Every structure is written in structure tokens, then in C-alpha cells.
Length: 225
Ligand SMILES: NC(=O)c1ccc[n+]([C@@H]2O[C@H](COP(=O)([O-])OP(=O)(O)OC[C@H]3O[C@@H](n4cnc5c(N)ncnc54)[C@H](OP(=O)(O)O)[C@@H]3O)[C@@H](O)[C@H]2O)c1
Image (tube, rainbow, N blue to C red; front, top):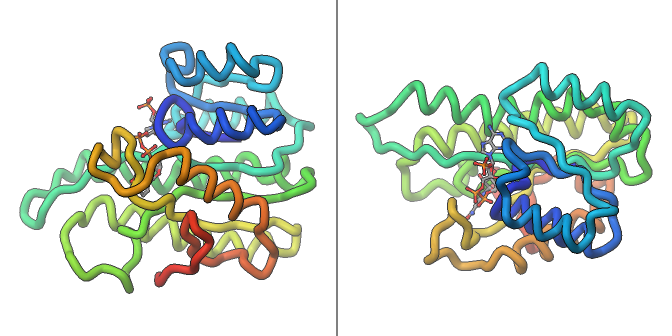
């Protein structure tokens, strides 16, 4: 199950898992408008279910969870995110609040709503796309108060989930995709989306309970909080 599936990293996760034979629930605000999802459905339509979903709409998340009751979810992938990055003195608190609703409350609400689906699956993994920019230990360049704080906070909730859900055999990790060439990462980013997603899929496939609650990169290395 993949949120933020319309473009960028989320769309590539949908394509790659479907091509690999997985059954994929692709969640996007407007799936019918996504060229990437349309193409993946054309190729692998029997394996891809599209669901319109804005991750700030908690009632819609609950409704989807109820509709899919009884369907196990092996990997819940929280990908939807926005980058709001203003310098000191220029904070836009309305946009900062909205980015918290997407980047922090989105993964939290999705995890609370779908925990039974994950617990009923074979793999039992909850993975949230975070960023190295959320690392406090790795912050040498300052700035980006808004984006950094949403990702530091989502790291904190993933750590708590790793503790609270361990008894149910659920693995929870925040993962950094690299600096990726998407609309968010821009054309000068270091990593192409296929490489990033292939790396993350390998890391996710190999996750062990001992790694739960660690801050991992798409290459499988452990990052500083
Ligand atoms: N690219 C990078 O270098 C990089 C680095 C570190 C971390 N990340 C993280 O990786 C994730 C994916 O990034 P990306 O590069 O693929 O970004 P992107 O190209 O900007 O795509 C963002 C995705 O999030 C969706 N989204 C935004 N708000 C949403 C909402 N309220 N409900 C549902 N979906 C929503 C967008 O849907 P719409 O099409 O409807 O807008 C889109 O599918 C994000 O969490 C980002 O913070 C990216």
C-alpha cells in the first residue's frame, strides 16, 4: 500500500512492485490524472488497485481501512510528502502547519488506521519516507526549519512505533531515499528515481526485527538521528 503514488518516488514504487508481481494499493489525491499510474495500470492493471486519497483526510483514511478490512497489507509505505522550506525570519506558519498535516500526521494516521491489516500480513512492515534533512545530528547547514522539523518529527513517531508494535511482529522504519530527481528533488539531484526505489525495495525486502526503529538510507546504511 503506497501513498503519494501519483508521481515521483511513489509512482515508481507502484510500477516496480507491480512489475515484480505484487498486488499494489496505489493511493493518490487524483489517481485518474496521473500519467504514471495510468501507464502502470495499462501494463499491470490486474495487480494495481487505485484509491483516491488525500492523507490529510482522516475520515477518508478510516473509510478506506474499513473497506479493505480483511485484506492483509505486507508493506505500508508512507510516501506522500511536501517540501516547504523557508529561511529564518520568513516562516509561513499556515504552510508549515499544512506540511505537518501531510508529512507527520499523514504517516501517523495511516499507520493507526492500517495496523490491523499490517499485523495480519506475512511481512508486517511500516515504512515512512523521511529525509536526511530531518537528521538533527547531520544538520551542519541550518535553515529549512519547516521541512526539517516535519521529518525529524516523523522519525520520532517511527521510532515509537518500532517499540510499541514489536510485540505484534511489526517492523517500523523511517527511510531516506537519497537526493532524488523528482519534482521535489529537482533536476540537479544526485540519484535517479529508479535507483532510489530499487535500493529502498532491497532494503525493505531484507528488513529484520533487529533493524526496526533504525534510520536507514536507500543504500541500507544507518544514519544519525
Ligand atoms: N526527492 C528527494 O530528493 C527526496 C529526498 C528526501 C526525502 N524525500 C521524501 O520522499 C517522498 C516522496 O518525494 P518525491 O520526491 O517523490 O516528491 P514529489 O515528486 O514532489 O511527489 C510528492 C507526492 O506526494 C503527494 N502528496 C502531497 N501531498 C499529498 C496529500 N495531502 N495527500 C496525498 N498525497 C500527497 C503528491 O501528490 P500530488 O500529485 O497529488 O501532488 C505526490 O504524489 C516525500 O515524503 C519526500 O519528503 C524526497
